[in-house]
Length: 210
Image (tube, rainbow, N blue to C red; front, side):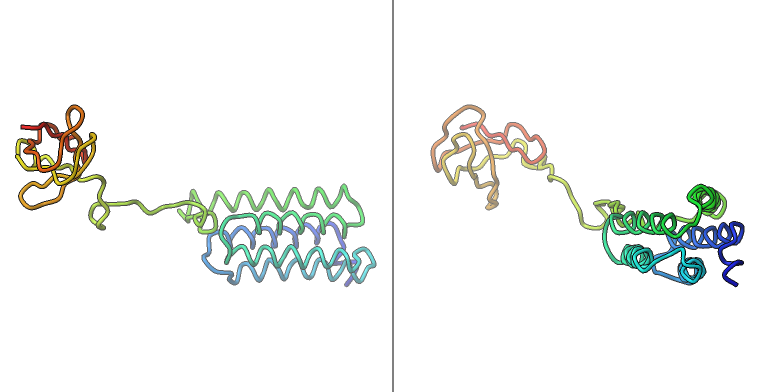
């Protein structure tokens, strides 16, 4: 059984299954069956190489740490944990391999197939990448949801009122019993002076003393 599990062809198949399982989990909001199958394929890989004496406890620890980091990626914001987990897994694969060149070829094949499945899920099945959506703000501030920008007070244009505070040039005025922040057209306007709104630029109210 050890000879079978360490065979280059079997190694390639196991790594491909693991890669595809991880890719499929990128489209899932929670860790599911595909992820468990991928992790199980890696466990079989490391079991065979450990029994053959090719992988030590340090390699197994690196593999376990990488697996844990990838699992935590589904619960943590950003992609730092997942990136470190994938890097740790790839390094542990090289450390477990008897032939670095053969292991590199197997990893490249697994990555190529995984990339193909990745684009297949997006282009053919129209799946959305759930994992990286956590890094992107997809919500918009819509008026229908109660979000508004600066209110344009064109209704005040031409109205008269009085200053509640001194305008130097900014201050507060009273128009129709409503407190309104305003700026004077020129410089200083004293308190309780009569003013008229001559210009409205969004939320900026410009007044002139009468």
